Image (tube, rainbow, N blue to C red):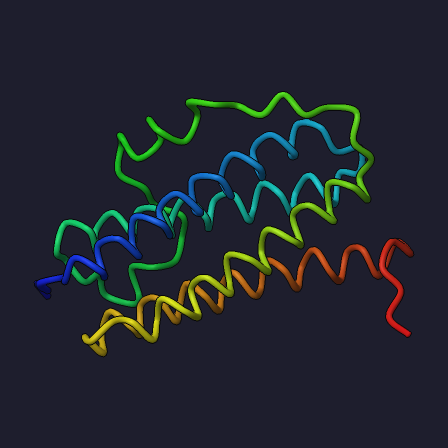
Length: 157
């Protein structure tokens, strides 16, 4: 389905695009830094889904509303990576706990940004697509939280 976006909607999508690119960078970089294989797998899985989100945002920016069943699987058009790897983080020597804290904070921020953006879109189908992405961002946060809790890195009391 085609959609005509307002300037504000385009601006919000550009913001979300940059957020997705940062998430991809972080998950990719951290997957190479973490010590625990379980955390490495969480990073790799979340990175693939973030790539799918980036592809979806690019589709929306081009005026196409993707079908919800095409949102999953981490499929990405070639070229979507070109801006993602421009500025690889040089952060090193972080503990797995510090990495998890950074990722959890990032997911909280990105989810909140989607929440705000959703309310600014007039088209219900676009809102549904953004809501779907937001739910996946929340799942990323949940996976990091559960990992941290299971390793004694996050105490809920």
